[in-house]
Image (spheres, rainbow, N blue to C red):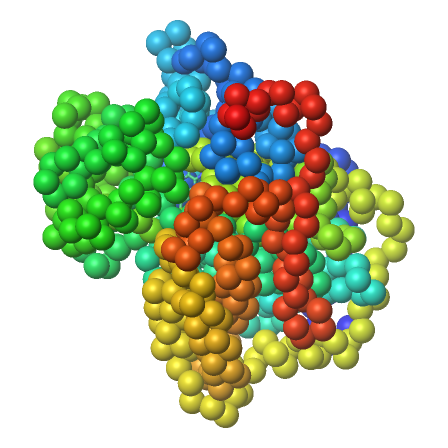
Length: 573
Ligand SMILES: Cc1cc2nc3c(=O)[nH]c(=O)nc-3n(C[C@H](O)[C@H](O)[C@H](O)COP(=O)(O)OP(=O)(O)OC[C@H]3O[C@@H](n4cnc5c(N)ncnc54)[C@H](O)[C@@H]3O)c2cc1C
């Protein structure tokens, strides 16, 4: 490997969002030589955009709250196709994860008697979201970063990984390049943790940051790991609609948590029809479908959405509780939310599916590969509850880091990786500069987004999914002809072209999985199969690569022991 810059670590974490940082801390604290690699700047991971809060049953505001209720809410929200083992661990360990963050310096909003304040959120029975105004992700990242620096964890910033290195079915490192120079880097590791986040950028209207390009899901799939539940993609009910430049930008659920009301153009509070009990605080899948229905039946607003109104609260309250939202609407839309309603509509937000992992260790189906955070699957089932992602990152990031360090400690020597394979990855990396075709990657990307928006969106149909799968093949065939100009230093077009490959791969996986699930369940709505099918409630869809072919199968959900079943009995009746 003489031609390449090669570095060696016990544990390599790919991604510096909440999951990656928490995993790296745990690995380092367990004694592993640890590094974090991320494709954007440190502090710019998507987690920083999280607004509403971290779900944990601290019971500071409602003393009836408990891990049992949090567990039940999570399963109810996911329509019972969650891995109950992950949901149990998550519900039990979230409170301590929040306290730990506080001990490390996070400053949460407080109750009158000085405890961490918790707010209401959709699908949560009690006020449960620990928050810092509507800037919770920022506080989380700041706190974790301080700890990363204190622990002197090595960082490779603005380094994009394009391949996982696999020897005989075992992951032994990662291959990528430095954006500043375009030079290749080989990161050999005894254990690799994927913490690369989501995939929302596959759709045109999305709340996701530019990093959400499905890299981790594609890297894992290409390496040979199994993916699970990929058909479950969450469309958040409230994204900005106007002006067009910010279409999709999130309007946090905290607005509804703080009392915001949803109304159609006739001024009707339409959630009374769809979920009279939970109203605006129903689960996201249900609210998104309700909004979709209102628009379809002609009661939508001028720009094709509905109104979200919190102007009945005092201006001081709104500015204190929702400072980012106030600023966002003022600056981008010239709307003063203390006086006027917001215009909102569904936006692609979150991937419930991802790398299949063991709930205790977060190890994938491949030795040496672990995954945590949005890139991993299991906890959220068919629909994630707001706030359950940030707690997911802390709880399972920590577990992944600990388990990866333990795994690495049992391995004596670093693997040798054949140079000939590295050379192949190198050629693949620079191919967009050398391709002879004249396909514009930006136009190919626009076609992909349009297809996903129209054919694999919030409401799906078997015929459209079939059509989309065919079109995706055509789009993928165009990819080898894509061409970028310029040199490899800070070449955004090149980076985006590489991400486009990941998105094409994962778009096909999602589309095929959505075609396979012939029922409607939480975030996955099929016009041709409008009902919940109890048989589909017993299994997950698993996708893997078999040589060059995409293989789809199912696997039963893990059996639930009697005491856990008892806990859910009332809900399951
Ligand atoms: C606007 C918004 C608000 C939200 N608010 C909340 C909330 O209040 N509560 C809640 O629970 N959830 C919320 N969510 C969801 C939550 O923020 C995300 O699910 C979560 O932050 C994902 O964290 P992560 O650590 O998995 O990945 P991310 O934070 O997305 O980090 C991914 C990291 O991987 C790196 N990366 C990706 N690909 C590569 C590659 N090829 N090579 C190298 N590095 C790579 C990126 O650079 C980045 O560092 C919100 C989401 C959005 C969009």
